[in-house]
Length: 411
Image 1 (tube, rainbow, N blue to C red):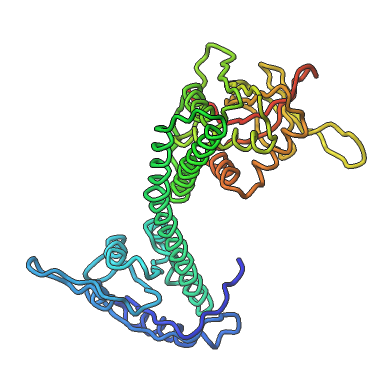
Image 2 (spheres, rainbow, N blue to C red; image 1 turned 120 degrees about the vertical axis):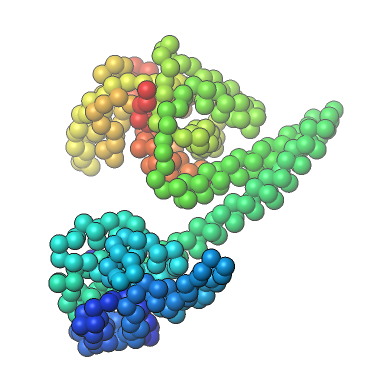
């Protein structure tokens, strides 16, 4: 692990330890950190307390009775070094009480030699690290303090950014989206008779719909950032595609969209409520990147078993591409990034007969590596769903290549 950069100034540490001999040892170590060659910490000022009640008072939350309400004050400490077994509290209850008083200060817990499981559980509950008392050395203690403070600083920065994103999301939905709704409402009341005015109104409607779609995309991205470990569910794909087509037809009046189920089986995938936004973002990128007009695009769900075949690409000649063959359909899927695997997959193809392979591959590159909001949204949610985007070629060589969004199948 790369050592974090040095912090400016000394550290203020609250030591919560009821064993006086141990406390004096830790205090001495902490006060002489600057003398260690590989420890960039300044010497630390240490305040020592022996009980949970004293620790809570030092943090800024004094003990209260049934008729008194304690007020939380700003804590002056950079870190809390906490023995979990104290005269007035024991084990994880000690940590829980401290974390209830402050979530802004990193906590490193001290455990006995035979209680490593307790230390691991403490980290799961919110401690930054744990140290076994019998193994504490000045260097190990200095590293634990240093990394805990730095991790907490980074977590605080992430939380600040999350709050700013949430504020941006609120502003977009309550300001821009409301304005777009007003514009669309006014435009719906217009009935122009001459072609020039009709085109102008049509452009206004297109712009308003685009603003609404952007607010949906921003909302989905904020939600993804706020919930990095989502709970996916079984989602029926065909209704999602049908709803997406309704929105797409509103935006692209000169493009015909269809949903064409290739089997009677109900295709279901592992996803969430944002799948429809992802579908629209994929189609937006294809339409805008290929500049299609008067085009017919078919969204075709599929469910298939697959097996992997891998070949090595070479710049010296037309070597076979890395590819996957679907055992049910026999189609060949270009796989330059090693995506996919054995098992059952499901998803949908975008079939546009007049689009050639280079256009589809360029669209895939944009979806994988682009930095506009649609591409970032697709990248974020395909990673969230465990899916991928690629170009499909018929295994027998007949037929046109299509754009494929592959997800994990669900029952």
